[in-house]
Amino acid sequence: MLNAVAADAGEQAAGASVVRISYSNTDGTFPPPDNDFSDIPGSEYNASASPDSMLLAFVSERQGIPQLYVRRLNVSPLRGYASPVTGYDRPCNVESPTWSPDGRYLFWVANCEGNFEIYRATLEFYHIDDLFAGVNLNNVRNLSNNAANDRFARISPTAGRLPSPATVMGTGKSM
Image 1 (cartoon, helix red, strand yellow):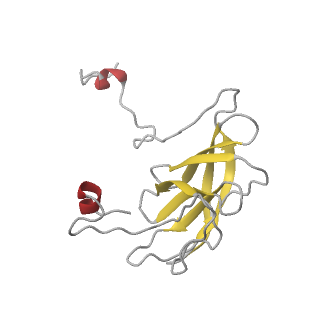
Image 2: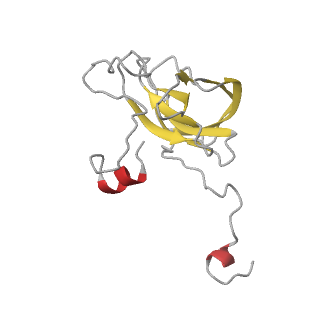
Image 3: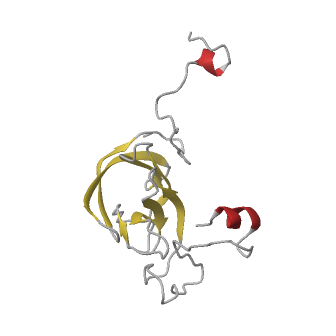
């Protein structure tokens, strides 16, 4: 996580602040010992902050196969623990978690049976405090369910409140 100075001028610039929120590797080495990350090596990727910036959904391979995780996003100093929210029991490609604008739903893409599909689930919190967010995914639904590869799903920030085509075209009038 970079502050505005680091994002604009680089991590070494005066006034830059960088907080590492995950650990990824490609060589099987373990994370540094002074961290709150998993003690199991594995790549972590496709992070997505919740609309209120309190939670982070991401994909981690720390269990050997990709799973979705959610963690509290407390920084300065970074604290908290990540918990898996999917329980895939076979290798699946999991990617692109994204939140609905109201934070009630999580969307992601997975390929477990030969093609990528878009999924949505309701988030149910069974525990939340400063260090941990216990989350279950309920009402998991395959939104695409077809033979094509459906990838890189993202949710519109207006979430269904799209203007009419005439308004988009600049007339200001509805059709």
